[in-house]
Amino acid sequence: MDLQTLTYIVVGASFALYIGIAFWARAGSTGEFYAAGRGVHPIANGMATAADWMSAASFISMAGIISFSGYGASAYLMGWTGGYVLLAMLLAPYLRKFGKFTVPEFIGDRFYSSTARIVAVVCLIICSITYVIGQMKGVGVAFSRFLEVDASTGLLIGTAIVFLYAVQGGMKGITYTQIAQYCVLILAYTIPAIFISMELTGNILPQVGLFSNHVSGEPLLTKLDQIVVDLGFAEYTSFTSNPFNMFMFTMSLMIGTAGLPHVIIRFFTVPKVSDARWTAGWSLVFIAILYTTAPGVGAMARMNLMDTIQTGAVGAEDGNLLYESRPDWFKNWETTGLLKFEDKNGDGRIQYYNDKSTSFAPKAEEFGWKGNELTVDRDIMVLANPEIAKLPNWVIALVAAGGLAAALSTAAGLLMAISSAVSHDLLKGTFTPQITEKQELMWARISMAVAIVISAYLGLNPPGFAAQVVALAFGLAASSIFPALMMGIFSKRVNSKGAILGMVAGIATTLLYIFTYKGWFFIPGTAMLPNTPDNHLLGISPEAFGTVGAIINFAVAYGVSAMSAEPPKEIQDLVESIRIPKGAGAAIDH
Image 1 (tube, rainbow, N blue to C red):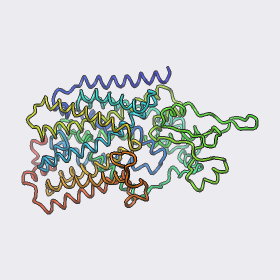
Image 2: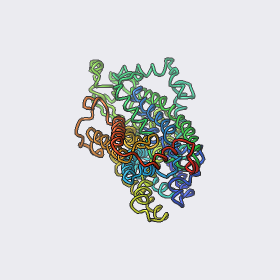
Image 3: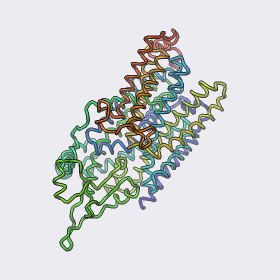
Image 4: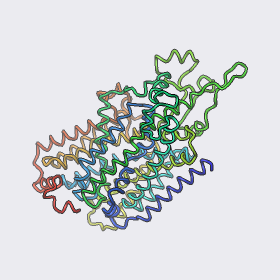
């Protein structure tokens, strides 16, 4: 069966499964819509949480960045996995113990202020909308190649699918859909990795193959280092990043992960506090399967790319050398616009090298090369790798379904967080508390539909690679929500004024910094300064500034609280009951 037909079958079957599950698990109450009725088993919830958390950035983009950045991209691995440990250890059990539906609801009650709740909603929406842009970018990339439509059309198709199962099922439908999506995405990620590891190293496990010998006899990483160095690039295993920026970036990802509302609300769906802890443990197991595989996928994808396009002479005619034409996989991806070849010296061969390398320039000139001729969107590497390695069509079709599952599962979780913030926190909790449960459910679905439309619109013009866009969202969460949650759980002294001004100061400074180098809402041409390391404050990139925003948040909150009245006695008792099992009372049973 040809690839196109097989892809339609596999992707279509997966979509039918997601929509079927959503209608089967249709939410009939606000408890089911917001928290799946608090009846999800920890293992199932761990799988759903893993799917919710492992977005297009993890599935599609992370290994692509590792492919081109090598060791320097380890910040993504350390930040995202380390952040999940923070979330599991410091926040999730306590927030579940509090027994509410949403993160803004906790912030509003803990800081005894509807204003604090509204500010938390605004921060949540800003973070979530930014995050979902990255998911839409991933959807567009996957659809543009495998369904042979342009990225914009693919994005709209993905939007329609999310609309069908997220709006109908709410958290209950999303939970069971995400379980199915986890199964699809993890099989789609690991099966090609196993095939390729066997081809390149003879090892069935990519985690082992990465540190094994290449089939040529030398270590895989040593061979890859030599190939890239010979073409003027830095060693794959070398560290060329600014150490301070890498530290700040890793911290931003870590605390941003721990402050992501769409992940936190997953811990509200289990029956009791101990189940939240078990959910965290199982989630780490399910996440580790992909994250320990990603470095091998990245390195092997780069190796396959270099081996495929750096083709040699295959003969001669009238004294002129004949070179291999571009391979079929290359031509397929060229049609998407995500892979480009410009024949600058007219020899018909792809010259891929670092044309900014002063040490390699004389050699390139000697060869008659006129500059690098290849442009690769890093987000294609995981999706293109099975084609490059000439794996069976069913594996390639499975990868397409996996990439879409990763993007759609996280998009659904983000939209759920936005929906619940608008309907439960803004409408029911603040402005129209008199509405019935049925009306609240209706507004929840309407707000989710509006959020889907806005996300699709913004996703049509993303500001960078999926992982880079997601990193900005993590920075915004790090600077606003994470500090408020930490102080809400572990400090009796922080009051409402401190929390409100801290969140505003943290997210405002981070947004201003992003605006300075990226532009307002990522509109091209609106940046105030060039986005280069030389122009960054202390070398801190926009993606890493969330750490600074968090420090500002903490400093403002503690400073203002110290200069104003203590929180009421009942609020201090509430903090005590959340953090310490003794005396927690009925909160444990919620």
